[in-house]
Image (tube, rainbow, N blue to C red; front, side, top):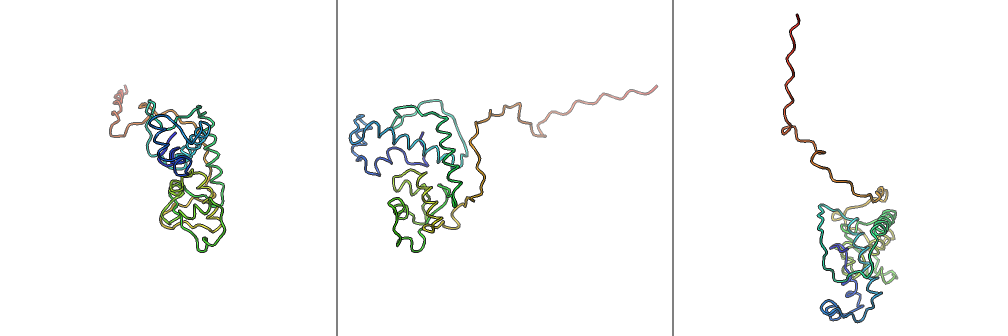
Length: 217
């Protein structure tokens, strides 16, 4: 699974310095994978797959088209992904995020440092998030800038907002209330056929004429 809303395996590998750009180019052109083993590559691809599913569900899908063909991917999975497990893990992540004191929308909430946040002693992840929080970046943008997955960045940024280290820029963000009900993932319903959709009144056929009344004897 790939999504423009989440860093792919290439971004996770390159921006964290696990492999160089020349090694990645060689892997794509010749299939030679130096600097990273098969097991680590599978783990990174699995991380990117789960993160892509999370960003799709956390956003809004305006349109969807099914294309029955196989797409070329830069990092194919060495083992198949169970769709049911993927849906359950995605539902768990959404539920965990919405259960936080101040859940953030990974695509819309733009973050800026709070006053005095730079003077605090922070963990490496929090320091990196704080460094990329320019007031115009969302958790998704910060994830791309740091080469990290969107879900852990969104969760940690939500904690930093609750701890007073980050502030949501007003006027540019959509606030997600903590009391927002959690909607579990449901299987897709069968699309309505043409017979199930009522026609507009202007296109409906006229009703049949009523039979004339018989004269009383």
